[in-house]
Length: 246
Image (cartoon, rainbow, N blue to C red; front, top):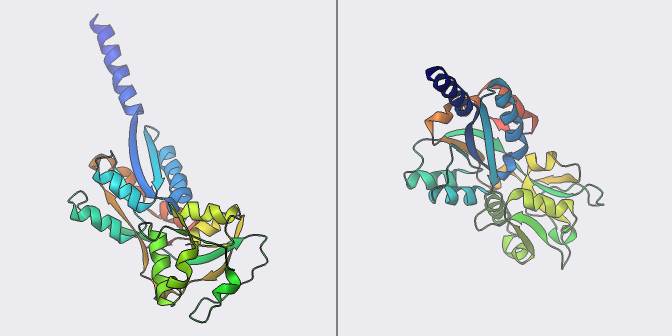
């Protein structure tokens, strides 16, 4: 009987180890890179399962505030990470990546490259009745950056009625992929993972705040994967997808 109990105890421990998981909330623009990095980590740590939830940083931050179980949070801007710091939910953050903002169109579009500045003729890019795909400027980081840039370029108030507001940057990308809108504003990394769109312009870096991705550890049990995100192996994956690593 004691032997049987011992065997059961061993099997229970093995099962517990097999079921260890790390829950990661990450901005939608990180989807491809983080999934690849998660697979690399699982290959090296076969008793750990990385579970991702991708959405806009604002949505994820509010879910965390409401008590959603999460071990690691990676935001597409400092604002929503600082929001959780102010709520005393996040204690510390590290800035891991940077990105840039680009204008995209469908891969088979006749639109050609454009220099984006205060002289840009947006009526040629966005005829009356057409819409500009963008993350919702009210809360989606990509949309906030786009609004800031367009405002500094002096055209936001003119273009605002034509915005197609998406719930996250990948949703904005999809609108252009499906040709529901002729153009869209996304991160350069999002454009590079799709063969259905092409980049036709890059927004001047001095027209919007630096696009930074902070990461925070909310559960020390996930410290292994948190540290892995900062290794050369993980950085190589981020580099592959066009992010600028710190």
